[in-house]
Length: 233
Image (tube, rainbow, N blue to C red; front, side):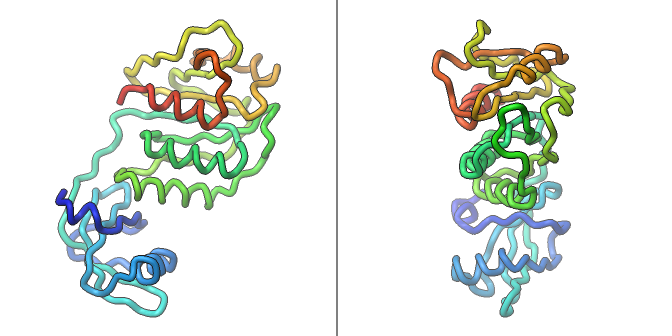
């Protein structure tokens, strides 16, 4: 990819993408290009949809509320992740949750499983808002695919079909050192730590591997990023 291409705006689109087709951008994207980036007809952007790779696109027309682009040459072919990386994360304060989502996308998470447990302080999540945060993070970090955002479940309703490392505070566990072979998951506790019922469930659940993150007690979002950054890609 040329340096000039990397400097052009990069947008996620829901449409199928192929050379020669036209795509009408959303009102938010159109506003971004015309009013924030001050772009004009004839200028180039990049688009991707998580399925067809990444393409150059030329702004074909600008109306009051909508921008239409014509898809040009392919820049990168689609490449699916070689393995699944699951993040099981509690609902925490919105600003911290947004930060965790953004950075987990940058670090290659393929599935995000939000949950509630004994000590979570929130019980609901704005799915559309979080999905938008995921898209924005993928646009910024040059990812070709989006992680799948799952619906909120209670901890006891989660299924773990792969080895999942569980951050356990104040426990005599080995330091987190993942064995990056197949699909993998990590699960972190809520802001108030694991409750007794949570610990009983995790202790009795197949594929859960308790692990230590060191001597310091980390915030939920810090724990997630610490673990993700130590998993070999």
